[in-house]
Image (cartoon, rainbow, N blue to C red; front, side, top):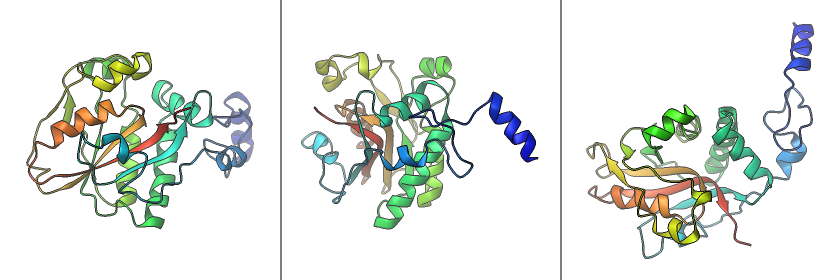
Length: 230
């Protein structure tokens, strides 16, 4: 059995996403060296931080959290690019398990009722074939013991990739609209809205504006990464 595993690894090597070194059997996605060097955000106050401040005066956010600093060509960008465009959904599992572990250590988001992903437009879903948040959200829901609801919030308009938009367009985001298909699930509930990267917060704000139509809803936000200003 070990012989066949070793032979398979020659033709389909298990490599670190960041440095391309061969992974040991105990390692997944990243080698231990790159894992230890990840630019993790040290958020101490989940109610008031760099993430929640993005939404001041725009949307009422209960708590906010992002795991990694996202910068051009850094390891966080490599991880999310592979997850988003190369169907490496194992990266979503890897990040969700790690984030879930961190949340348990801090007793955070353990009273969430539902996790909702920022949805893809149906045309983009057709082109890509998957939503990069699905496996991440499902895994995270199991870690913090809540339900993953992928089809309650839907995208009703298409939009250009955030990275291709100007700063002004990202801020206003007038061409991206969302709609709730069912509000009964969410009345009096605490929902955790998830996305891969937060930059201007315009897409998440548009989602929140729709969610806030629900009576007595409590909205928190969690993203894999935050675009650090330089």
